[in-house]
Length: 246
Image (tube, rainbow, N blue to C red; front, side, top):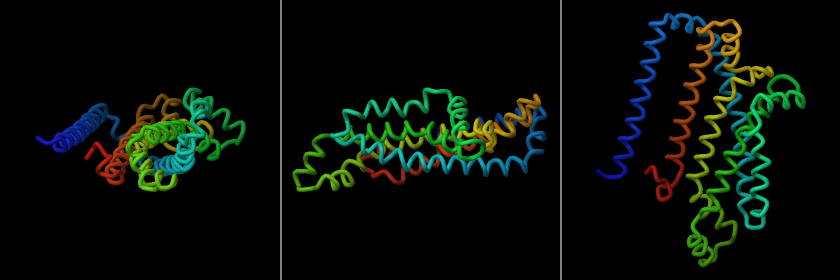
C-alpha cells in the first residue's frame, strides 16, 4: 500500500474512533439522565457558543496577525542573536498561569471583552511565533543557495522559497494555538468576557452537573472542530512538495 493510502486509512480510523467516543458519551449522558438537563440549556448554549467563537476568532486573528510577522522578523540573520530572548519574553503568556494573566489584564483594561481578548492573545502568541521562526530557520541551506544563485532578491527568497517550505511547521503552531485558545476561553468568564465558561462555572457553583456539562461538552466539540478545520486548511494550502500529509 502507498504511503498516501496508509495516511488516509489512519485519518479515517481517527475519525471513526472520535465518532465512537461521542456515541459512548451520548449514551452515558442518556443513561445518567443528564441529556435532558443539558438540552434544557439549548438557548444559552447557542448564544454563549456564538460568544465563544467570536472571542476565539478575534484573539486568534490578532495572534496570527502579530505572531507571523514577528516570527519572520526574528528569523532574519540580523535578529537571530536576540530571537531566544524574545521567545522567553513571549513565554510569559504560557508560563504564568492563565488566571494570573487574566487578573493582570483586568487590572490594566478593566472588566469585559478587552482584557479577555488580551489574555487569549498573549496565551496564543508564543506557539505561532516559535513555529514560524523554527520553520523559517530550518529551510535547507541548499535551497537558499540555489535561489540566490539564480539571482533572486532577499524578498523573493523569503516569499518564494522560505515561506512555502516553512508552512507546514508554521501551520502546526497556528493549529496548536487555536485549539488551546478554544479551551482557554471559558476562563475569561471570570473577567466578564462571556463564552461557555458562564455555564461551566455556574454549574460548578450550583453543584449542577447538567449545567456544567452544557458548557463543557460544546467547548470540547469546538476544540475538536477547530483542530479539524485547521488540519484541512493546512492540507489545502500547503504545497504538495512540502506537505508530508500528501
